[in-house]
Image 1 (cartoon, rainbow, N blue to C red):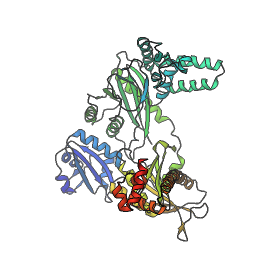
Image 2 (cartoon, rainbow, N blue to C red):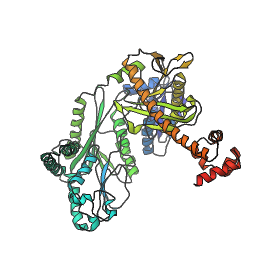
Image 3 (cartoon, rainbow, N blue to C red):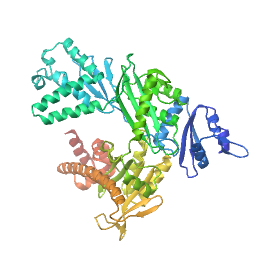
Image 4 (tube, rainbow, N blue to C red):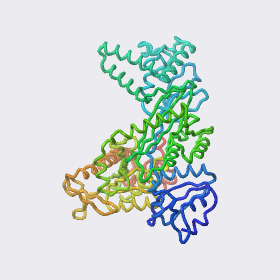
Length: 597
């Protein structure tokens, strides 16, 4: 390794440290690879870690046996690549922040005479677009409140109908479709609605009046819905007396590390008022480092799809990569972005407010995750299993082969992250390979979780470990399967025990053990999800077979076509010549006519 370090190029890049087993320990970026990596080491009398490094780095270097590097064109490129690799590969000694979600914005396109407010998480093209937000929570409630209080065009289809509808009759619309309101008068209503997005007290007061009226009319369900709307809107912001008169637009980030977890607080100020706030907890694997935390949080939050961002970001702590992070964001959005650590004045009060919220959130007792902690201890996991992905596949005699991935996140099912896979391999290990390979390929867009649970035994566990090692991803894996009785895995309840296959060997738990029940819950949900997809796919395939049978094509011929082309879709897209080669011209002619109908 010494010769590699001494011969590193003096250019920007990313370096990676590995241990003797090839496990990725750390990813870092450098303006000058040779100078940066050499700073970690002393070369006399032999290669050894530089004792001036932090305890965390010294521990990492003590485990390092080799390094790799990637050359890039600029330090900003190195910053982006470093962040991407940390997300994908989960290095042992880097801080691992939870992936940030894109927050919704409310927008209005005023290029039309009677514009509507809409909600979006992505950039909307247009020259007359105005965005409001972001709204981490309560955005939908805020949009619904606008349409509840102001007589705006309620639905996209309203103007196309050209005739006043029920909304006009109940005084929720002024029927511009029949010309009952001019664009100028409608524009005044839009202006009032826009102001209420920034000064929401006025909006909530009107909602409270409406709620009281509904309660007096004994329309209690509608009144309760109004109450929930008000509460959602009120949760958008933190309590603050800070109110700047200079129409300042800034985003404020504060990161604070506690004994067991850290927290990121984000405040969003528009026109001198804090319009929304949010926070995210995180757990670092080893010793906390502010520079890593801030640059990762900012690069994760401001994706190219972000509809709008302030040109100035206030941070509660200075960090060494601030200028490179600002430059990377400036290039990403095509405008000058500044990252500032204010030391005094109104802006310093804003970062102080964000830090106060960090402290308060860290004081709150974390929801107990007793079972997950027991699982972590049982399986000797490298990190706490906040997010778990479980895989299973389903088929019947090789027909309609599919796979499913279910996701457990922070103590509940994250059904929006469930994934279905159409599989083509004949054997179950091959099918699992397909599924896991596709998931690994997606790590660049959707980072890996804390734990994989596989339905299956040692073969599937070995497969997953091999695939993850090839991808250099640090991820804990276990498999759960029925023990073999008479060389068969009996799936029926009570016929055989579930065994847990881990890197350290097989674990057998008693049938009444809550840890086993939790693992079975994950496996059974994956099985339920996969088999539902299989049943739907099988039903569609049976319909296709039946239709082809009706056209005079026998079941054996249909199977021959499927064996060759793989799917019915591929059969339908195949040419006359291809089908003729597999069967004959008569069958090819029947399928050609079937496709035309």
